Amino acid sequence: MTADNKTICNCLITAVLGLFPVNGSAAGELQGAIPPKASAQHILLLAPSAPVVIELKILVDDADFCATTTDYIERLFVSLDRNEDQLIDLKEMENVPAFGIRKFDQGSPAERLQMLDVAPRDEKLSLAEFAAYIHRAQGTAFRIAGAPTRSSQVIELFRKLDHNGDGSVSDSEFEASSRALAQYDRDEDEVLNLAELRPFSAAQNGITVQAARGETETPFRRLDNDSSIRQAAEELLKKYVEYANPKQDALALACFNTTGEMTASIRGFDRDADGFLNREEMFAWLQQPVCDLQLEISLPRKKAFRPSLKFIQKQTPRVTDVDPQSRSRLQLRIDSLLLELRVKSTRHMLADSVRFYQTRFRVADGDKNGYLTPAEFMQLNVPDADYKKVDQNQDEMLHVEELTDFLLQKTSKLQNQVVMTVSNDGKSLFEILDTNLDRRLSPRELKNSIQRVKEYDGNRDQSLDPAELRGHFKLTLELGKPQLFQFDPREDSMAMNQNSTIPRTVSGPRWFQRMDRNRDGDISEREFLFDTNTFKKLDQNQDHLISAEEAEALSVDSE
Image: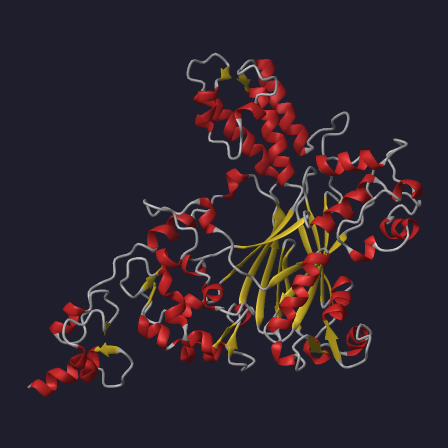
């Protein structure tokens, strides 16, 4: 790379990070100053005893986190801005379509404009205000991702056992667990290991692909647009069924477990005054919810400052033990749940990602002619990158400047989104049922599943849902990471741990140890080598399994 080329690359990187002023506006950057006002992201927490609404006031570079534009938003804005004054006025507002938020989509153009015209109040819609509306409607500015901390947490038994799809596993569904999970027993050894139950397992080599890490289920739900709010209302009906009316299409006001002004406010959504909120009433409430907890978050994108997390206020006694541990960390409790929150800056990762591929560019350029051919480009392994898209002038000579420009655009788009990653240190359902800690589920462990989960059924409704298990959540809020930095070293350890060798059974008489081929400590009818009548005679409690104790009893009788 020549000295001029190096200078160009360094300038591009520095400009993206905002380390010195640049002329003009980069793609995705708003024209003009944005008022330092934080948009409120509402999150619904499906806590064990009652729902909780959390409000996050988020600023990115001291601006509304929803106001960052994309190429799509800019093109749409330009198409609506007929007089090209970079504003949408009342006449142009007539052509703005509905995007999926009822309270902003209904009414006359003047009424819609009044609701969307936030700051400044000039009876016109700026690009920032328009972007905030689109992001809200499409749910593109904020994302919740559940991340496993142990390989056994990846196993989503709830979805596999929840036959009726109501979001929880009832006693009857636990009783049917052996039949429900039989389809996953690929080696037909009657026990279910992590490799069999883990979603998206890679095929031959046993290595987990990137998608296999996936996302685990969390009790946190976004409240962005009509679609997400309606889905949240349905989940409330499934989760808090003990508060439902006989038709199970409404929840009693007592479900919301509020006091004082909050109770009066929620009662205001009960339009028919029957003491319940039906689907439409819950929908109206979730559009403008009474927030139990308010937090303020500030994240750097191009500006250089430390991220911050502030506790604003709580409006319920259910939030306790609020402990601001540092500028970027906060710990609190909601009912029995412990929440550890922190904010992180991913600002440096954008430049690191670009430098990483610039180094790989020099390595891949085998003939040292200063550009990459399509064959050489393949060695870079840039995720989701096509040579023709990166080679801007289509001359089949990809220079480092073209690669740098592509990477800057690709990685900066990721930082248009705030991501809340949720992990937990609580036990998963798989870990609760795996009583002997061999990272497998045996027939006996599935038979005893109802007894094992009773202590976790906090509301004693003979049904278990994810929020009743996971009592310790770690929430990390940051801007989207370049894919290069989405690798997690825990992936390799989780993949290796799931292939651990199971020791031979050492309990019971010798014949029992030999017949127990799957080494789960019991002999099933399939493993038993003699006739059915003998099996039934040995199976004293008629649970269709011969235990070591039952086998020992036979040996004593024989003596």
